[in-house]
Length: 202
Image (cartoon, rainbow, N blue to C red; front, side):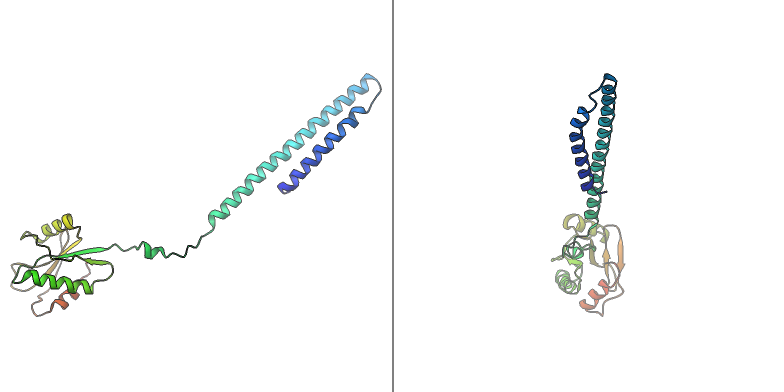
């Protein structure tokens, strides 16, 4: 039984009770025992009607609560299509920042700048290359990577290996040296940058 029918039934019973009161009150014009019996019967009928009406109203309230809960569950389970590609708005991949240390050999600053330009052209969307070469002194590659991270918020530092008879490049993080190239003496900056990006570090 829906809440609508329960409410209608309760109203009908209420009207029946109201109209029956004068009729029952006017019956039994005899002696005192008959009047007492009518009074007792009227009391039982009144109590019964009150109990029935109370139960109907209670069922109506409970049914209304259940219907509201079902509607709330239905609304909460609906998937709202916004048309926004959240993977593009908040990509899973973190933007990686790379800086290039000033190279120690002749024309090291100019060579490092050229290396930055080539690296920036080849890097993917998830890699950002710092615009200028960083002059971080002659400390170890790891210590220079620590300074680059602290002062320029750089994840990785590309450096040229010093004190080597061959021309080698490396990648350092604030924790360790992650990669060192083979001899690049006969390779162009373009080939060096390609090998660096394919090293698997990024």
